[in-house]
Length: 224
Image (cartoon, rainbow, N blue to C red; front, top):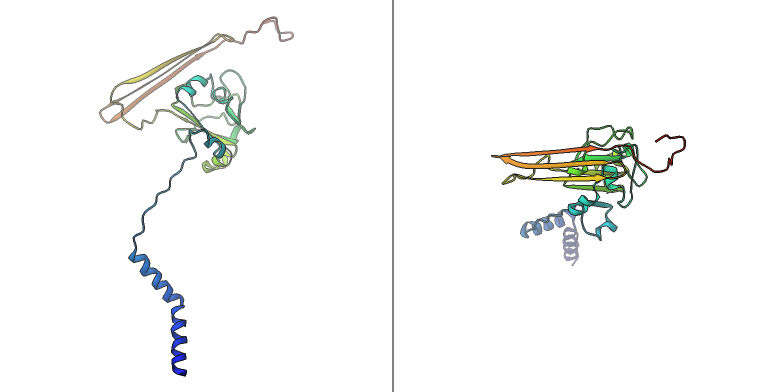
């Protein structure tokens, strides 16, 4: 009887031993087939409901064409949480949730722009909204994926300067805008095509403005 009890206790201890349980689990994994699950997500969405959960905004299509201004700051100044600095007609940079300058990162096609607009407000942003396909705005913590320089947020201007597909035929567009307060004239155009397996892209922008005109000498001691 004593031998039977000893054998039973040994069997119970062996059954609960970690090595035995690990071997059983490994056999179960080898017997069954584990399906591959791929989870993808993007911080940039177009749905209205996503604006509540994800602090992102994408301007594209007719909405972008209606809001394009003489500068990137003027184009985005009416978006949620966005205002613009003002240092002349051509130098205006987005301000996101009160943060500006080097705290707001400027990208073009996902890469940093080569300008000094973040150091001084009298310099314009190198990216031109008039020839953009879409403009993406990230506000708050979502922008930290792009480094500490985007603590306030970031603006990514997407254009066709890096073609993602070859155009089967030559395509292009031309836009013209006029403003009365400064006799402003703004013309922009794009041209896309391909030669064999080489994609071609051309864009250009021409802008000319005069001084602002206000009636009745509103500025004291100003002869204009």
